[in-house]
Image (tube, rainbow, N blue to C red; front, side, top):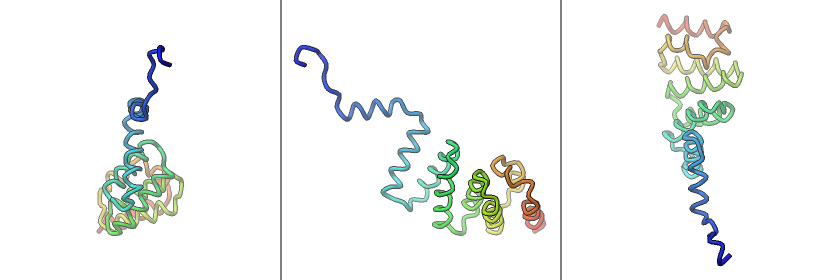
Length: 139
C-alpha cells in the first residue's frame, strides 16, 4: 500500500461517515436509546424517545416506552394519554380505552384535542370512548 496514496479508514472516520448519512430522526433514536441503556429511568429521555418512536411509526416499541413512563410517573395524566394513543395505534383497543380513562381521571381535560387526535381514530367509534368523554366533560 506504500505507493497507493490510500490510508485505511479509522473507526472514528467510519463512525462520522455513518452519522453524516443518518436522518435527524435516526440519529435521535440511536442517541436516546444509548442514553436509556445507561439510565433506564431517565424520564425526560424516555419522553423524547417515545415521541421519536411515534413519529417513526414504530408503535409497538412506543407502547413499551410510554408504559415505562407511566410506571415511573403514575399520576402524570399526559403520560397516560400518550400511552392510550400508543395502544390505539397498535390496535390494543381495550388497553387504549383503559389508559384514556386513567388519563382523564388524573386530570387530562383537552377534550377538543381528544376528539380530533388521529392517533385515537381506532377507538373513536367504540361506545366506551364516547362514554368516557360524556362522563368527564360534565365534571
